[in-house]
Image (cartoon, rainbow, N blue to C red):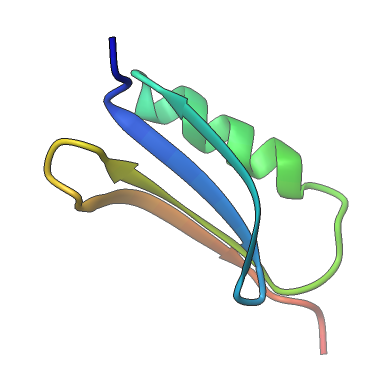
Length: 64
């Protein structure tokens, strides 16, 4: 059985982690936990595998 959503985390333009699941909220929590405590230009998105559309995203920029 294929998962409904795929979450990906990026540092700058490079993918550093990914996870799949059927609950977008759980995947969003997973993304935030993976990026917590790390410094740099992190971002992430959750894509609905059926439609290809981004359903949730985040961006964490380094302090100036």
